[in-house]
Length: 329
Image (cartoon, rainbow, N blue to C red; front, side):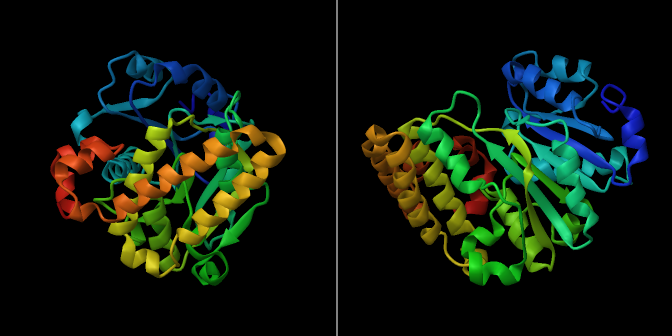
């Protein structure tokens, strides 16, 4: 891929990096994704696609674009182990790669310098992880947009474990939809924590902060990425977040519980909608109520029948294979 989008630029810089993208049936996203990647002022030394046995033309399209495509059975995908495998593959392909940049298939780099700005964070030797700003996709409505505006503000910041007194659980907030890891720091902190239903990014972030590394949020480095979830999807995702927080409860205690973040979000969203879409406030309140119920059920998932857990979960494959053993079921 570096040859396709600028090998000379890749050879001149100091930081060598891999772009890694897990995909499943990504054909409809490929044009925008690849066009934005080709516009970057920095080209990846490795462009690696991990495909979970797509049934569309995803593999063909990415391979023709110069990516190395590795196909795995869909049943073998999980958020942490698959990404850990990808990092190890990148090191085997080029052992001197310094940084792994993860994107999801529907995250579109917003500016030609997005990657350059994100990678510049690693000029500071204390930075172990960095993530960029996620902007609402074009056409996103007020409810969809505010999720991104709340979680990804317009100012950059650097956070360390000591900042937990100021930020609480937000200290380790992180997102693999657009994120970069100093590979040696990730390995030193134990890699992606295996066995989580989701949140491998937050888990890795927490471990790296506890290991003494700092986290950089680079607001100038942007992607377009948001989702128009239905009320049911919000409920199921919140259930899975509750499961994740139960799995990580000992780690979370070291940063502070996430409940205060949830309260701040509900209050701030209501204020935003009052200014921009007041007629949607009842819908937002109903959605947030469903999210809260889903989250609380997720926190007690071990007390629920497995058959019910599967129905409530967004990531149902997690419960259908051996991974559920790691969740204590």
